[in-house]
View 1 (cartoon, rainbow, N blue to C red):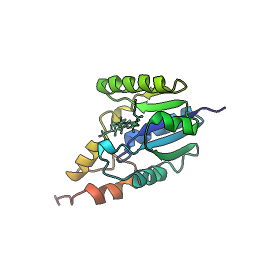
View 2 (cartoon, rainbow, N blue to C red):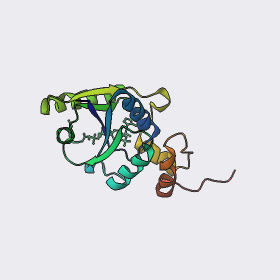
View 3 (cartoon, rainbow, N blue to C red):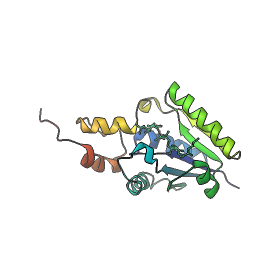
View 4 (cartoon, protein in one colour):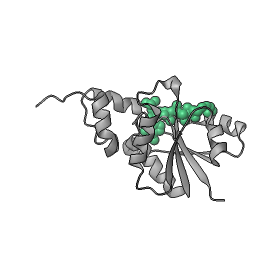
Length: 165
Ligand code: COA
C-alpha cells in the first residue's frame, strides 16, 4: 500500500513557509493530505472553508496533494484517511519540544502513526501565520510572505493603505 502522509496545521492563512514544507513532503511521499485543523482554541481569523479553499488554489499544480478540513483528534483523521505519516515543520528549539510531545502522544494514541519533522528553508525560518497577519496590518509588503493566491484575501482582511512616499 502506498504511504499516505498528512501535513497538519491551522494554516490561518497558509504562508510560503507552509508551502515550502508541502512541496518537499509531496516529493517525499506518494500521497499527501494537507489536514486543516478547525482549532477553535486558536480563534482562527479565516474560517475553515476559506482556509481550505485558499490552500486548494495554492496546491492546484501538485497532483498528489489533497486538502481536507478536520475537527477533533488528528489521530482520528489519520485513521479515517489511511494516514501513517504526520508531517510537521519545526523552526525553533521551542517548536522541537512541543512537536516531540505531540509526536509521542499521537503515537501512543495510534501506534501506526509516525511523525516526520522537517526544518524550514532558511528564508522561512521565522515566518508564522500570526506574524504575517501583523505585518500585513502594519503595511509591510506581503509578496515574500504568502503564496500569490493568498495576497488579495490577506490584504482585504488585514491590509491598510500604504503611505505614498
Ligand atoms: N512555516 C511557517 N509557519 C509555520 C511553519 C512553517 N513551516 N510551521 C509552523 N508554523 C507556524 C504556524 O503558522 C503557526 O503560527 P501561528 O501560531 O502564528 O498561527 C504556528 O507555527 C503553529 O503551527 P500550527 O500548525 O498552525 O498550529 P499547531 O501547532 O497549534 O497545530 C493542529 C495545529 C490542528 C495540527 C494541532 O493543534 C492538532 O493536531 N489538533 C488536533 C487535536 C489533537 O489531536 N490534539 C492532540 C495532539 S497530541
